[in-house]
Image 1 (tube, rainbow, N blue to C red):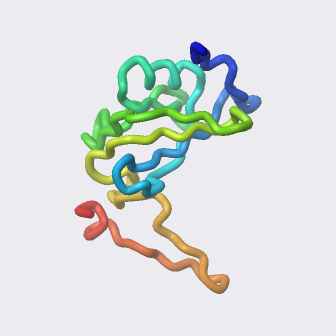
Image 2: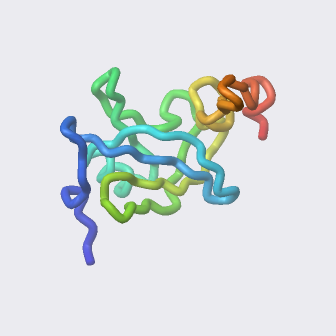
Length: 123
């Protein structure tokens, strides 16, 4: 069956969440938004392309930072309303210079920072 991005279930802004996961470790790196054109660009180029809600523009991961996400596999969830981009990540995935965006844990009602940017970017 041929894949058609129009068959995905986008929100009322035409966006779908996309979770990026490291292909080697399985680590969840980040979540960002895509529209149908970003999905198509990602599949056409092999470079993960998101839609920036704040800038209202395409955002090719690593375009300015060099922290590229090379697409290994793009997966669609069972409801077709979320994507999983399995990627080879170069450098940190988070704009805070941390390896992942999910670096804060809530433990017993308290936020605990799990990694600092100086040490996590190297891992």
